[in-house]
Length: 410
Image (cartoon, rainbow, N blue to C red; front, side):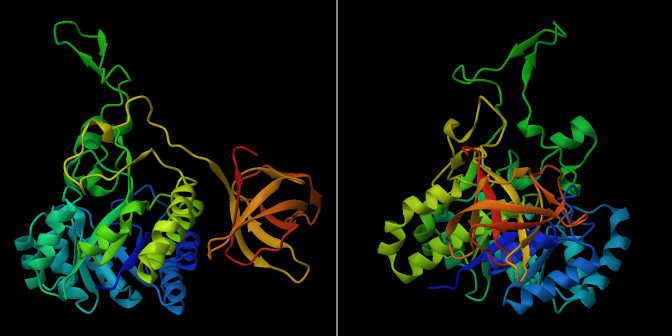
């Protein structure tokens, strides 16, 4: 059996540390340019250094995305960027464009090169081609079934790694190469600036009747015809391992620390339980499914893994996420008096009952006993201002890196 890596996204330094503490074997991040999530906060060189240091201290790898489809005007900047990364020292680069790949191979050959899903990797000869170019790993196209991935595994060198998305948002376009955003808004999805027009509501206009909008009906349930459900393979860990996938990749470089903690912790436990004892994995399935539903999602599908998706893989009546929990903040440290120091993310009040989410899988209810504003040192009854720095006394003492959240039902 091949070693299984859990690869978690991180939008910033705070989320990277959360991913590390909540079970990632590796994290993938973007710098301030050349990645496909321009709207994510991303990492400055200083934050990247700190994040890599923190991850390595905990035995976790860091992969950096440089997966835009480059134009001529990108190349000089890319050269300087790869020189900077050579000095910073991540474990791997995720690249889609052959020109960008050749620059990385020339400038920083000691850093592993992984070929992005954006490169449309759908067959074993493509994998062999990239292996001959020195690639350590190739990310499968999202359109592949598990049977196709098995066939790739059988026909590529043993030391070549396969990475596949197993959870998160799906794209309407082939391997994420989309022109809709550029067409409608001038923001190029292949340059990292996607406006997600697949989530918009559409109508049909007959060319002889301009301005007369006719709704698009799918079983009379609405008009969000491009809006895919999210991928979720938590119930299919054995099949993913059996297919020979080395790295289980979670989508979401624009997600919050709460999302990352929830998904990382759940998949970590599911993978470990299965490897320890398949019966333990089966017995804990209700816990995995309950926990994974506590992060934001758009209903779930298994994507292409068991064949071409049907119309059931789309959501027709809404483009919004389901969100059962509210993210309150991360505990940075706990002082000698038991106060948890946090930077608040959403409003909560004294006497609220909240939940301490721990990396080991426990969720502990706690009452908010006291809130101090760190700026003024005064006690307050509520924390309404985002990013307010607070000292919070709870009925149960948390640890550093625990997540504070509250159910919307409270």
